[in-house]
Image (tube, rainbow, N blue to C red):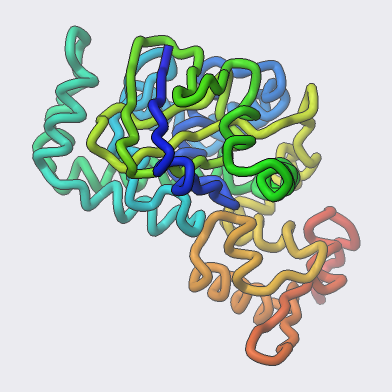
Length: 336
């Protein structure tokens, strides 16, 4: 059981994030890959196929050893400094890779207690050795690009619907409605939020407040950071339909080929532009930085796949007919 002790001061400092946190989504999606909930079964099959095609199976196994589903995983993989901020994977990854050596050593020691360390890799990370950290960054980015980015649209739709409903409840019933509506595994018994949890834990907020973060890939019950001195966060699973069937192109042969030609993130940008998006909206939908979104849109525009229209201080990107044909595999023509 996890018991979060909430003071009256904390009730005034509850914050509901509008977007998932990119690093939490990466780790929690990895947990779904290890043992999927029924909701994620189609995603699981398609993602396993895509990861195998990319030849990153060994990397995924290493990440799974670092972030196991059934026990503690290192807090530094989901940095509290980025929790609830803009859902930018690159910025979150920078925080992961800049973790101090003392914290790395503490987290890895806790993870490795009573279990074998795979091939010395844990020791290299614990020591903050740059080659090991760079390898970790590369593996996380590859995995995120293949397993998470192509499904950003479905994730965003579920999260926006869930958060919108909770915001309306807060406006009508106050901040305690957030604590009382986090799913069947949670109970709000003032002043304690009780959550069915695999270990016995008490978290005392002591006036620090609580950031509540929606998650598409979270499973079973809300989850929090292990170290009590870190800023308090609670990641909860958003309301979902009984089963999710990913968009056909995400797992089709044509979709895989499009990812191979354009790169997974750039292909995801093109898929998202079935309706117009500003650079900021595009970045939020794909969990990338506005700079990265602008760079990808510029490259696609140069290829004739995207148009950009300026509207005052902002711009709006849309897919061209050629871009739409490319996404759906239509209208292939031989270039003379």
